[in-house]
Each structure stands twice: as structure tokens, then as C-alpha cells.
Amino acid sequence: MRRATPDPMIEARRRGPIPKDVDPTIEVLVNDIIAKVADKWTMLILEALDEHGTLRFTQLGKAVGRISQKMLTQTVRQMERDGLVRRTVHPVIPPHVDYTLTPLGESLGAAFCGVWIWAETHHAEIERARRAFAAAGEASDVSACIETP
Amino acid sequence: MRRATPDPMIEARRRGPIPKDVDPTIEVLVNDIIAKVADKWTMLILEALDEHGTLRFTQLGKAVGRISQKMLTQTVRQMERDGLVRRTVHPVIPPHVDYTLTPLGESLGAAFCGVWIWAETHHAEIERARRAFAAAGEASDVSACIETP
DNA sequence: CCGGATCCAAAGGGATACTG
DNA sequence: CAGTATCCCTTTGGATCCGG
Image 1 (spheres, helix red, strand yellow):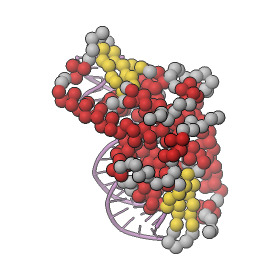
Image 2 (image 1 turned 180 degrees about the vertical axis):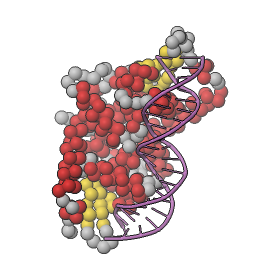
Image 3 (image 1 turned 90 degrees about the vertical axis):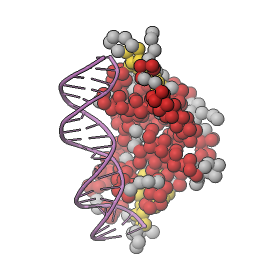
Image 4 (image 1 turned 135 degrees about the vertical axis):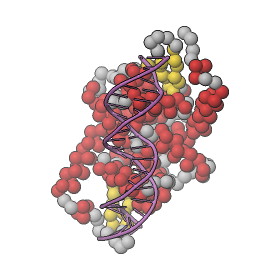
């Protein structure tokens, strides 16, 4: 299967210390963004909206999976503040609210796309690694894993 | 600037309900993986190792930024169990332990690469959205945001 | 230098009940 | 339907001390 990132610009960005065309203070800002965005629920909601386009509150919750309405509300509100989703309220009875990604949110979804694919592709490998680690831990002492240089 | 994911396979995966070539039970597994991997510290450690290649414990902590040694140890151990990093202990005094990504970890790093770039590209936009949201919240009531169909 | 162990504060997150 | 509010338990995560 073809890799998700054959882009030469991406390769250029990997490996090696921080390129000097980047403001040093930007590094912490970027880490802040990563930390904000790298939330379990944020990613799952982003994925759901990226797949389905537009969803109502309950539909969104169902699409995400096991999420309480508290976390759904909380996370979606945060994403709205960050400009990732647009929340539209139709003043009818019963209430009708739907959520959709903004262009910014869509761009983040596109950026995360490689990760969804990675998860689909490698989940078996992770489980294998986990079992291997567990087996190694039971079979032998930790000191057996060290190497003498 | 060119997008990170021009891959046709990626485009094919986005939009629309779950393709039927995917086992329905896989969806929850993938979400599990996402949830595991979408951890703040995991992503930052992954980024640090992806950039620097190999790092010792303290160096890694410094590269990540504001992380306590407890979380560093904990997260790095989890990543080791998941097969993302390889931990090598050199039995010398003082101890020398270094961490590096496994091929699996590198593939995840490559998958996340689009996200680093996104964060670098759009962090200003997020801050702007946040200020705009705050300004809107102060200026008017929430009911002013609803639209009548 | 690289952690493990312990204590403790704060945040995360579920369940339930209630409202417009 | 789409939340808000409350309670309460669990997890996270920092600080500190200690050991190999």
C-alpha cells in the first residue's frame, strides 16, 4: 500500500533540528496547538464530522460512539471557540441544532486523515506488539533486555 | 502552499459512510487506537523523537517541553508497550538510556506529519477565531446567532 | 542519570435529573 | 431534541523523596 505522505516538503520537514526559518517562540505555540487538538474526543468528533459532513447533536454522539452528552457538548463547544466547527441553531420545536466543519476544521481533518489510515492499517500490529511485550515481561526479567556495549 | 494529502486513496476514504470493505467491528478498534494515540504527551514525544531521531531520557524531556518526569516515564513506557519506541539501557554508571522510534513509531510519525504542518500553518488562525468568538460573546446575546429558516 | 514510590491537588468524565 | 446543572468517582499529573 502506498504511503500517505510522499510529499517532498514533508520529508524536508522531518529529521534534523528545528529549521532556522521558524521563529523559536513558534515552537511552543505549535506545541500548545497540538496539545489542544490532541484530545481524544476532539479527534473522534472531527473524524465523525469529516466523514458525515453535517450532523445533529444526537447523530453526532452516535457517530462518535461511547461519549456522554456532557463531553460531547463540552468538546464541541471548545471546537466552536477554536473555529473548527460551525454550530447552527434552528429555532423550532423540538430544537434542531446541527454541526459542520468550518474550512479550518476541514483542513485539520485532512491533516489527520493520514492518522485514520494509519490506525486502520496498523492496529493489528499494535496489538501484536502489546502481546509480545506482555509475553516478554512474563518470560524473562527486565535485565535480560539490556545490551552490553 | 501545497496540501499534505493529495493522495487519491485518502480522498477516497473521506466523505460518505463507512465503506463496506471494512469490518464493522474494526471501527471501534480504530477508535480505540485513535483514543490511545491521541494523547497530548504521546504526540509531543512522538514529535520530539521524530525530529531528533534518538534521545536520552533527560534530553527527551527537554525536547518535549513542560513535562514532568513522571508523565515522561509513564508515556514512554506505554509507547514501548505499544511498539512505538525502542528503549535501550546501557548498563553503565551513571545510567544511560536512550529512546528511538521503531519502524511502527516512525510510520505513525509520518502519519502525524500533516498535523505538525497544519499546526504551524494555522495556529494564528485559531487564535483569531478564539478572539472573534470571545468578542462576539461579549458584544451580543446568544439568541442573536440563531437563524430563522 | 534514570527512574520508582508516594502523596496530594486538580481535572476529566459518567449518571442522573431537570428545562425550554 | 438539545442541552444545563449537580453529584460523585476516577484519572491525570505535579512535587518530592529515595534508590540503583
